[in-house]
Image (cartoon, rainbow over the protein chains, first blue to last red):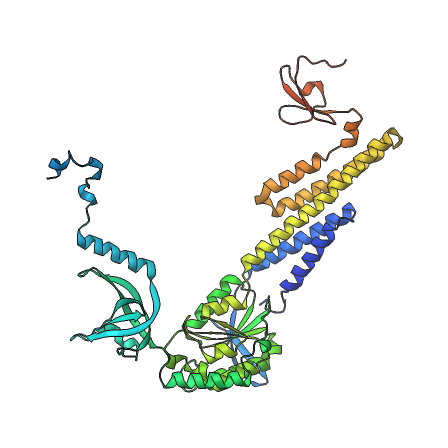
Length: 76
Length: 418
């Protein structure tokens, strides 16, 4: 169901921005810059993949009388 | 006739037979043009010259101060509206433009009518709007902003209406990662207002458990009566009381409800609500690509600088630096460049131009300090650096790069040794 895994695009984009900034400040040695480059590209590719492969799911909230709610898949 | 005139008129002025319009063809084409270009539109104006035919069709003129248009509402379309036009009535007319071919007159074919600023419900609406406004329920300062990237949202609407389909397909297209929860309610009739208000409270109660970041209240278009639940005080207060931001998308563009005024964000339709509540993944993907380009450029410029520094040092210390050391560092530089290019190639396959230009710039990092000493580099016709007599043939054009400028030359002969 993949429900436990919360995507956090905001966090990923923030991290990516940090990486770009660090790379742009140019005080880095070569190894570090390649490391950052690879991390950044990996992150960007992952987010893009998540975005393009995500499957839309709609749930209908049925009842929450027992404090706990119930939701079922809702197909249009 | 036309033959007799040919002395007087330029032949080019004479119409070709197939270019001559018949009146009926002209009217027909004008009609297609209007019908195709306008589609369904809303027009506001005042009714005059109302005339009802024996078949029940209503003909009237819709006018403003110094402009008017003929309109007709056919008997078959009248069932869509409870408004019967009267002279002097201010109307909002929904319809299509067409040409009445028999008379060559263009007219509005009305399919739905709304009376502007009249009626009992209108009065109730204005009264509640005034009251809630005075109470401060519409204050801009109280409006919550919507999250940029919601993880989870609640949709309060009918499970069987057009609205949920429009919202779902919009979200599916733009940002399917968001978890969507439908809170099913009636959206018209006496029970609707209570159910909508109840669902707003329920969504807020379950907000934490479901991780909800924002809510939509919505329904598709309908008459003022159909939309009425969204003008009820209990719904307005539930929206105002929601600690989750609420987007209100009720009816069509022209419809305004109390829900719209009190919500954190009013949008004209259910589809627009879907657009408002989630970002578009295509925009995010573009943003990511820009970042990737910046990464590549940032990294390439670091390598470029390292290489330049290396070459500067090599030139400066000349033979005092063990040549070996230079070679090691140079190889390391090349390896890193390759790693960069390989990683880069994976995702920039379609942007080979960029990579190519970076590769060029990396490999041609300017060895100025060596050139300054009088060394030069000679390139063959394909742009390869010449390192051996075997690289060139007699008659070939060469380019030699000096510290200042370039020499072009032609090979007159080659020797293995001097």
